[in-house]
Length: 288
Ligand SMILES: Cc1cc2nc3c(=O)[nH]c(=O)nc-3n(C[C@H](O)[C@H](O)[C@H](O)COP(=O)(O)OP(=O)(O)OC[C@H]3O[C@@H](n4cnc5c(N)ncnc54)[C@H](O)[C@@H]3O)c2cc1C
Image (cartoon, rainbow, N blue to C red):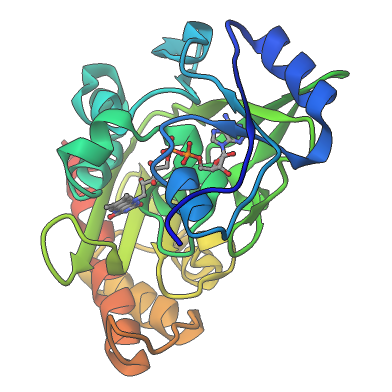
């Protein structure tokens, strides 16, 4: 049956009202942003919230700007807005590259950055990109707000630390000198979910890697991160040999599963190769 079960519908005007409505309706209420993930799940009755709190009028959650040494991205920013944002591209080209290969214009025009991260699909692209650049998520509730590193945001497939009565409001990405980033994805066709994808952010100190972030999606990497490859690279020469070895380590430590998109060995191979390529391109950019 392609019809959702009965639910109440509320349209909030600001964050305070979202929080009040979440408190009024209790744990069975869900926020709806673009609706591209939640509504299909409701039609299939994989989700049956008692109430939907629509946040599309909450314009205070829609911005991309730099404040001091951070890029701030509001949760209601649409994929298309992040794709087209000059300020995001200037500091983190990884976002434009990831957004370019997410779905199609219909989904990108409506789907939001926050909705994507909250959906926590194990093949979601922005989770890997935000993990690579070491972003944090700001979560509001009735008591105040808390900031959670992206690397602690996902607690499992389709599960995050955003609890009942809480709203994800913002992403914060630290801007550090000497760095750049890149994203590499393989899907079965244009706009499809990833078979495997890797994002890399790298900061150089002369010819060496001062710091690095590597995000992986669709290949079962814990918290979307290739932690062992990051550890290997820190302090090493930023050259092809190091990046190739980091790719091998990333491939070895991820845990893909076989499905209609491909077998385990192929996905593992892709994870390694895409990691190496993303690192190489991020480092080239960081040098210029
Ligand atoms: C055809 C198609 C192709 C796609 N291809 C890709 C792809 O290639 N790569 C990729 O990464 N993604 C892909 N997607 C996923 C797409 O990016 C997401 O569906 C969409 O962007 C989710 O955002 P949304 O705003 O629509 O979320 P919604 O559907 O509104 O919400 C999703 C979940 O997040 C919760 N939520 C939303 N906002 C908040 C908030 N601020 N605080 C707390 N909880 C919140 C909702 O309650 C719900 O549980 C595809 C989707 C479709 C339909």
